[in-house]
Length: 119
Image (cartoon, rainbow, N blue to C red):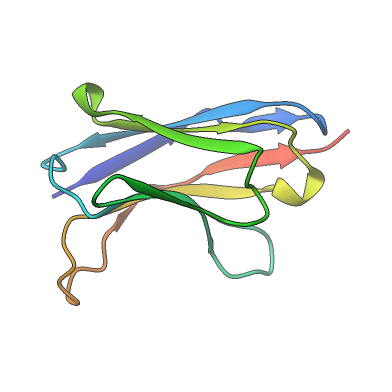
């Protein structure tokens, strides 16, 4: 059983920065996808940034050059550094991990952390 706990959200002015953290418990040493999604009011959940097995990363076009995903394997923690934040980045940010490519494995989600970008 995997448990994900996000932290670091809050209110920030446009142009500001935040760093989100996702601490994972349980057996996640081997995973195929781990990273961040977000959902803003009235919209579907969308990918923000993820690590893919093999070491590659995947970013949404809207955050490229502004957001950086990183991780500390020793701490089972993944981070999202968000710079040059815009009002349209306002959303609930969710941590996600998927352990296998088995189609029956839908992955695990954290409870989410609110990010609000407003002056």
